[in-house]
Amino acid sequence: MSSLPSRVWTDVEWERIQLGYRAYDMDEKWNVFCEDRVVFLHRSWTGHGIYEASFAPAESGGYTITQAVVETDPERYRNPEDAYDCVMLELLISTIVLGEPATELRGRLVELTAQRSGTADLPAGAVQHSVLGLRTNP
Image 1 (spheres, rainbow, N blue to C red):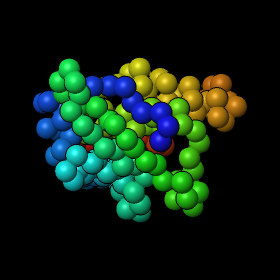
Image 2 (cartoon, helix red, strand yellow):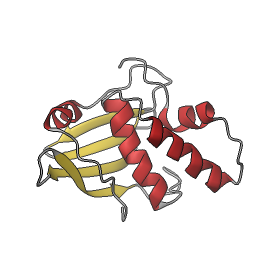
Image 3 (spheres, rainbow, N blue to C red):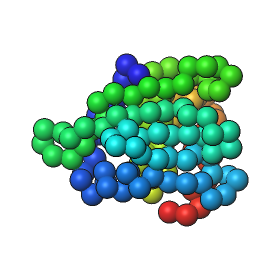
């Protein structure tokens, strides 16, 4: 990925990210797990790996994403654009793993999806559910 989230996750958040998240319901769309300092984000139904994010300690403390890759096979994932994937990666970690509301990121996701589709009045809830799914076990 050429664009990476600029967020610095605290040490406590990094500890939680390392625990990952397993989907417990058909409406949950993501499984997240960590090996060493690489976080893997897979679609729960297919098992396809979509994102891999490498974390490293930040100079000021906490952890940042230093490198990330995204699936480019259009049969597994329709990769719309770098800005979308940057938002999605941070949003998935923030909402699915950490259980944060991430209101600003959710809004940006809806904006980018609307731009891509050419439809200005997309229902925000439908957009978010279609890509994030439902996280029933915060």
